[in-house]
Length: 319
Image (cartoon, rainbow, N blue to C red; front, side, top):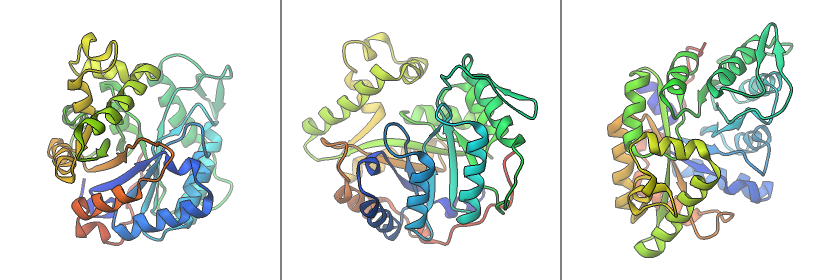
């Protein structure tokens, strides 16, 4: 990862679901402020709110410099042809500023095929993602082709998906992981692949209250995301850490909570373990509220002056 690319994306960004529940005008105002605060990227999830393409367009059109990244665009929600064409459109309209993160599992009953590349609807997640990428690449362009082409990353957790991310895309965007996973991911992917890690945080000096918010976040993912549960077990946590509510050890590994210094330490741990970029998901008692106070405080504590540089246009495209 070159120094120019590091400066382009920045060392610290924001990850959020909170924009889904906000009107478009409010989202524009907030995104513009995050850019002014100096964050290098805004990562937005996709679940029950806005479509990832519409959300990306809203954020990109409200800003001038900052990278907007899908974290992630769910491959179960759209055909690879639609994803390829939408990505080209965003890349052409906002050169060098859109980063496509892909993840999720296809659950429909249709087998898609583009120029001989089948995209299985069910089955092995690795084979599904490999075929989805191939189908995107095989989709012909019938309009303007962006230069540079938007980068792609995968929501990779396990060794096989991390290797695929390094081989077929720009890199990986792990979610719900401790710094130990970051070190393993860097070892598996090598030094050239991009590694942008999500880190959940609770900025609250009342540690009891902060821990309650953090525990609820971890418990929710253990209950509804079997792949996240499997990943923490793979990292060395035991059944006692994930059964009957998350253990204190697991909560402390997944969520950084306390004052800005506690969060700064966790971000430094990820960077020391090999992360190029850490995107902070601020948790609060009301998940639909915009954590603007926290975003401002964290920017003062964590954003480096280099983040304010003009984004660097990539000179190579992932295969």
